Image 1: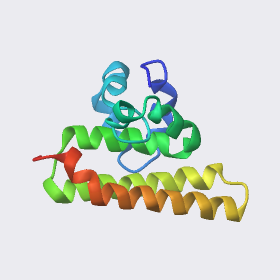
Image 2 (image 1 turned 45 degrees about the vertical axis):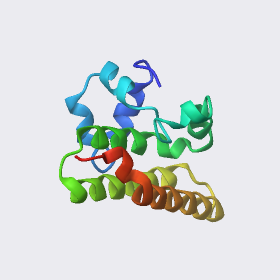
Image 3 (image 1 turned 60 degrees about the horizontal axis):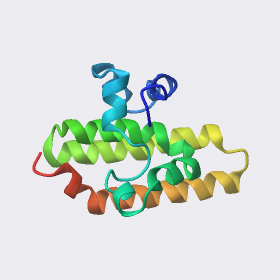
Image 4 (image 1 turned 135 degrees about the horizontal axis):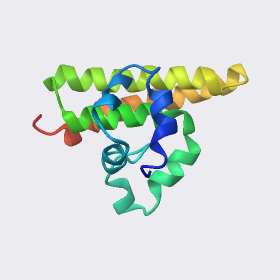
Length: 131
C-alpha cells in the first residue's frame, strides 16, 4: 500500500465504523503504518502475502486500514482492542453488502469476515502488545 492508494480508501473509510481515525494522519503516514489485509509480519514469512490477501478480500481493505491505525494507537486497553476488532467486522459487513450481488456471495464473504475477526480476537493481543 502506498500513499497514492490512500486517498480513495480515505473516502470509503469515512463511512465505516471508526473511520474518523484517518483524519489524524497524512496519506504518507497511513501508508507507512498500514499494509491492508493481514498482519504486518505475514510478508516476512510469505513474500507478497498482503498483496494476495488484498486481491482476494478487497472488501476488507478499508476496514483493515482503520483497524491497523487503531492498533497503532493502542488506546483503551483490552476494551479499545475489542472495539477496534468489532469495528473491523462491522466495516467488513458494510463493504460486503456493497460488493455482493448474490445472497450466497454475501454469506460466503461474511463467513470469511467472521473468521478474520476470530483470528484478530485470538491472536491480536500480540500486535496490541502492552498498550
